Length: 466
Image (cartoon, rainbow, N blue to C red; front, side, top):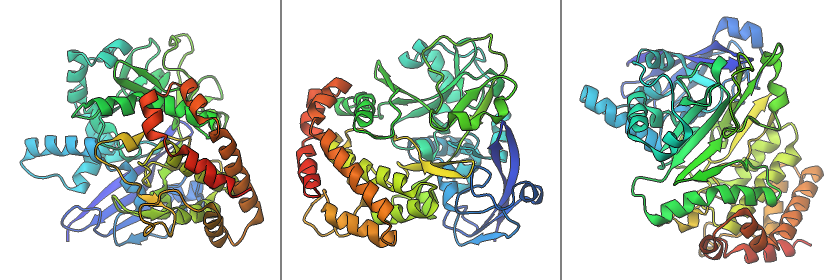
């Protein structure tokens, strides 16, 4: 049996720390093979007992006990390049070596700059060995126009391969950072002290069908609509020339004497440095904060791809781990109802995540919220409520049954149940005005008529709870 050991690092208060050793046990390099994860002794001494940003995952408390698993821990699948990014890395690897890339190869080649605050040290070191091209960066127009120089830069530096599971899917995605002069660089190549903003740039998928553009174009408007519906959402998305630019909420930039201790100040606000304001070169050196973030599948310990899950399982997790379980459970449920009302079927377990800081765990702002029912690929919902599987295509659940499922997994917690019901009723009142709110948010008429055509059914279902 072959063994490979990698170092997992955590970013805490402006610095990277060697946090744990990951030892893969198996000959195929597959995430379905056994492994051992063991926190470093010095790290345990410093952060013993932590499950917040000082831990690899909320599931794995910092202690000396080795974690022996039959397959990789689920948080590593958040780092593992999949979708468009993984395919791109795999093709390049086969061209270079003549061999198919294993999951372990993909982790080493693409685990240097993940969403959140975990990275693979060896992947980072490998990235530093690559030659640098265009160190002066690019203007935003060059990024949007996808000029020859920028696309060469993207290929040479593997930008599109940086999008790990926190930024997955079949659409090409690039992680960029803005410097003090307003120029844009591969996020992993710009030194932290020069950073002013961090964004995810999303382009249309490879077939570039008109409906792909329509879906991507309306994602920014959908985020504004979600905020109007009372959802915790990142509404600063910008659409320009078939390019979607999304400010990242797992990053924040601070300045000054107390910059390293500034992370809690960004907790509710995210990164408020706007990507389209003039970058300020007079602010001095920056400290970048990387917030601990993991998908709900990671929180659940589900190390699988394309798995179907039930919402009551996720509700149970949030009730067990969140500091304010009523708020997080209610937020999770109204997001699902809004997905149903607006035709967003792409609700798999990696499209929802939690973040951890100072002992607090909560859902991140909403992301990947778009009119995916318009996708010609006919995407189906991979997260549903228990009992809907054999309901002849029924998508919208009986909300009385939903409350019963919530009661079952939360031991009938009255505080959770009361807030869930209140938030559902509030959403119902807001959905009464969905057509007006959608138009105000910039949702196109085609999308409103075809993707949001179930909103009235959701409103009627909510009305039964009164």
